[in-house]
Length: 106
Image 1 (cartoon, rainbow, N blue to C red):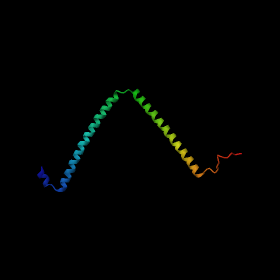
Image 2: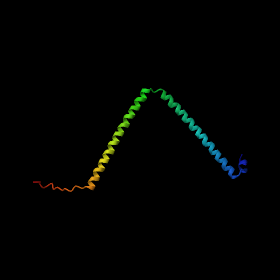
Image 3: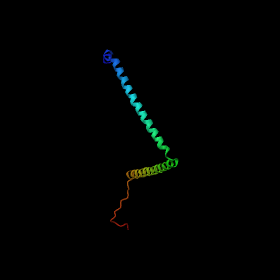
Image 4: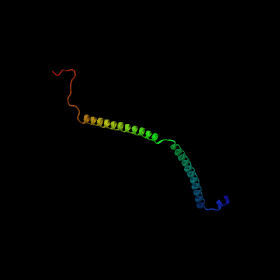
């Protein structure tokens, strides 16, 4: 076979090398697909053992957590906006009244 490789042009050798790489990639892809199919079958077998009520309960817990996170996020954004508004008003409208705390207002 090495004699055949020596008789080939450089372009033919490069093409043969690319076909070899392609074949190896396809074999790896085939193994990956087989692994995914095996894991999918295992997941389906495990899912068959879970009742609809358990799935529904888990979904309710997730929904509650997402709702809480949304509320906390909205509150944080609102607080940030109010703080920025207060900072902006202090910068643009500084207090003009000065008061000496040591003196009485009589």
